[in-house]
Length: 269
Image 1: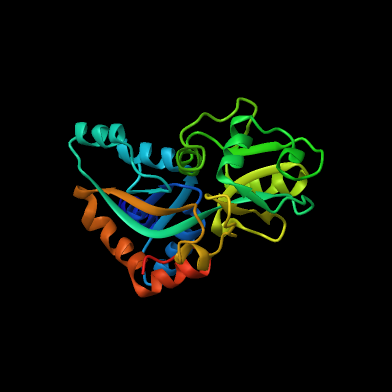
Image 2: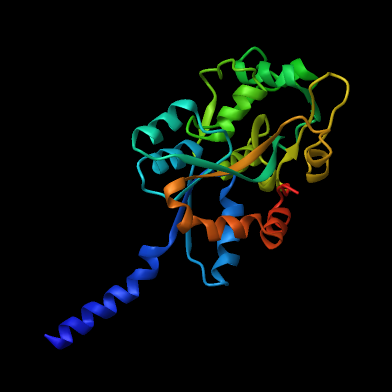
């Protein structure tokens, strides 16, 4: 019996760090940042597990109490906050960084500049060929994030002015899948968080006034010359604050905000 009890005790001790680990789930945009933050926090003795899936997935997990923090690239909806309240919990929002949404095309595409109106036309289906926006005679292959993505919703609201995506848009389950698809498809267009920009795709210069075209970068997001910028947030239940506060404070600290810069996003200060 003593041996059995000791074995059970050792088993509990072995898994307890996993059970006590804070869980962060949600936005794929936030994913590379939170992974780096969790890695650095772990070196100080903290334990954080991080998964993606999209902002909507993270917020749903927060509502169902299966994650401690929902990472989101869009604001929590009124209906989602209501569901939290119905479960007897209040929600806290913390802005951890800012992000510029980059519109990307294949490097072989000659088009460099697009207006907001042209992007709206492409994503609603009014513009279907690159020659309509100054490019060569080539079909536009439109990639988007899936509906659970905060980036999908932010792009729809701020770039498409809440008009519907065209039915033939190719929805991708993760940001990395958009990058890979645009790399491999000459006529492709997609949108990604700033930290996902790679040499394998070309970032479009965007204009909202039809005159000033600006490329996405940390600098242009900071000085507000690039027009598609949004906050990145953590949401958690206020009754869980003691558990999550250490990690949240770390992300907001000087060290945490340096990681924001290194990953490729914009610090909050």
